[in-house]
Length: 261
Length: 374
Image (cartoon, rainbow over all chains, first blue to last red):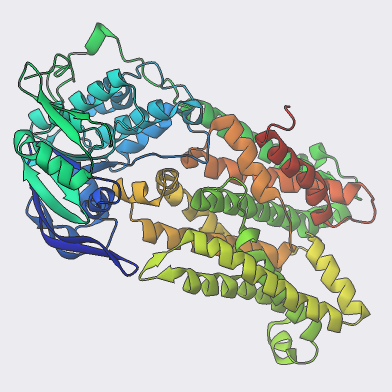
């Protein structure tokens, strides 16, 4: 479980996050939504151990501030929004970097072709020999996800659940791959791992989230199940525009923007 | 459940049900095998160049006769004079050249990995400028203000001053760019440019103050040369360069992770600050020592890693040793050329490396911008 108690983050003189208290459980896909500048990415960075913070964060009960980088890397993998490279690495070489920490959790005989497996998982089976820099933005993002999957391949290692932190994992993907990647995330959670993802697309959030945290001005404004959070009133208050919430036949809510006027 | 796609991931540790029944062809995009072959070829090339370098110069001992002289117990193939020339002049010079070349190329590769920029070089953060300032101080003020030092250290005074100059600049830069235990690589780059300019200004002042003989010494030193290499000089710098070179492979995995950016490297479990400091120490020691004995030899640090990345890719586990081998080979070739082109006189080696390296550097730039396509 990932638990934060009253964390605040100040960059320069501005307080970006104010007294955030949240829980992300293994087995769940926890989705963070919110308008631009509401602090979603800062929260992800703080959970990843990138930023100094006040308050308390624990990963599986252990305080984040006392954790060594390699210990953290064994518990969670982080997908950044985008990654540009200065050198001509092949796709295989990038995905293999996920094995740097040596704690993928895959069996010894499976580790050897883990990069190929991870690539197949994100629908890039034949891309190992391609140069990363020559891929499209969406393909690069999927390569990075394959690398991240390699790092924490088994969702549970030695009895401890592990986590995927995904910062806008589908922002440059076509619709087919958006669904594919979100399914990879949900599958990871179903097998005992935890997923925290920042999403802009409220409909994807509605489809795949077990819990939604809705952020506004550096705080968590609302949190709960999809049905609890995605209501017309809440959305209107937080996103400051008119949205219609309907229900698909399956009962899952969907969100449609209304005209701005 | 509202997903038709879930569940095709091979369960780790369990039966690996593979989607679409596709076999996982191992190693597509894995250039390790090729890199190993290139390493072997480079090692052979270096050995051949080393022998060739011993044989080239004003005295005409052949490659064959040198090898015979070494391996036939009674010796006697070479004349006493040639034997002396090879053992006391060319051998230390060859070893020093190989070490300096390897140090410059590895330093370049490490800096480029650290800065995530294929055009970075130890010169860029002012190490070479600091070393030059140290050397200029010793050459110009060695007889007056710094006389006690030059009396104490004798012929070591100049290399020592250069080495300390490089180290001092690096330490200063590190102080400036480190806040709260984190070194900002971007600040280091910018501050390095500023500090290099200041060091250059001081060096300029010293040049202005220098007399004619000092001026000659200074400009000769700045052009870079392996002339005057002796066993004593070699023993003075080898204890710095060899450990720096041997410890560079420990940086490889961290530099590979750095390619993704510092944050992602940390997420992969790499202790980022530790490796930054280690990289800076290795580079300043290797560069400082090499500049101290051979002057400012440019471009080896940019050309070698770049060529090798085209050949074997940027994986630092192979790039670092390959750079060492190619750097040593190129410097030995340049030195052999500098000794033979205008024999019995000698060209400063820095002129050669810059004359060849400059156009090469330009070619890299233009090719990247698509101006020329070669």
